[in-house]
Length: 108
Image (tube, rainbow, N blue to C red; front, top):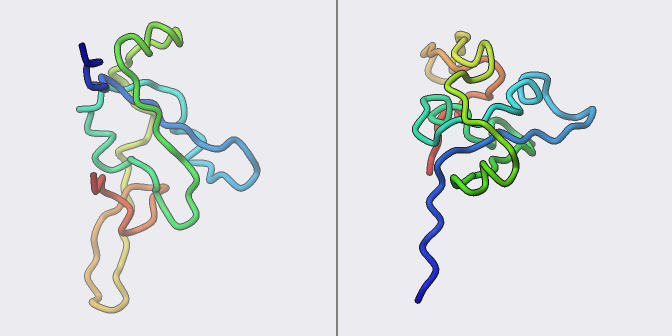
């Protein structure tokens, strides 16, 4: 019998913990959030040029094996935005704080 396909239930933001990591990215590491949480629509890595962050996808078994708990609360301030002006078009739009323009959506 074939193994069932991996069905991720939740995910955890993983930032490289060194001096080159952006402070916002470091602050987002930790909470395990359901894959359907709105956080992942804007904060799925990479979140900027040279971003080395990743996501650890977790099944129910993985959550239990690692001793994680699924949270309903994303990192504080994740929904704050800043105005960014496209110099070519002069259009201004809101992008999440800590994320480079153009990287603010999960393309997957």
